[in-house]
Image 1 (cartoon, rainbow, N blue to C red):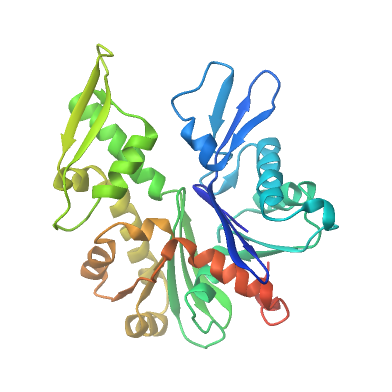
Image 2 (cartoon, rainbow, N blue to C red):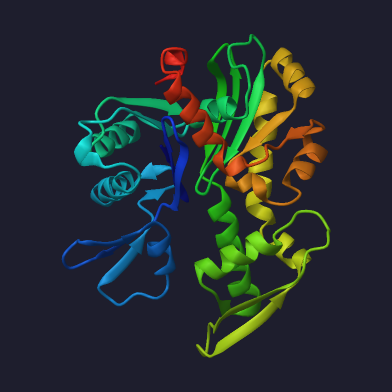
Length: 324
């Protein structure tokens, strides 16, 4: 299970990836009853009555609401397998490289109380490296940059271990929020999170290309009158630039911190970009321009971590030494 800030993905042994839903829960604040999870709950954003609250229980990669997270995991698991027919199933869960002991214990407790029996934990950069097919046993530096919804993990691996890691609380959600803030500050216009995210996905780019303009619907911040605004790709590029630069600076810092031999290895093999945030058009080109190191982008970076987690699940004995 890849329990991410933005999306939760589940891999079932023998079947592959069987589940991919937003990590979102809608619940009744009076009864604490969970009303919806995943895509359905995300569709509630901005459209709920006073007694219904929509939350992302994992903020920046850490569990913020234990009870809601537990209920969400239980619901997600019930969708992919009949829990009543399995007694305490075995599972592998991936976590950010910079997770604290308290955060790790929260993940273990939530998974255990949701019905998981034996639990293995693997760090996301290692899972991502396995997912893209790297030989993590090699005595060679390999850099993985996993850009998720709430966090970005930057890690350098060698000999099946992490030689350097840094987790920054910046990711795809930060870009969406930057776009929302830009609209408010520049045009005094408020838009919903889903609308801003769709705009970012459709026309977000860091390089000039053949992308089309996007029409955003929202309301005037002062008068609350409905408004529409057309944004050009170049303007969207400028709006999301700050979080992008934060990620790039963190990559450069990693290269500064590690020994020269590891940098040489990375320069020869390239930087491996994974996670949904890696789908931002032109991000690889911008990183290459700054670092002068080629970036490798897998076919489906969003599922790289869960594919690596699945491989570890299928070969637990082989990957035993990489589990936390």
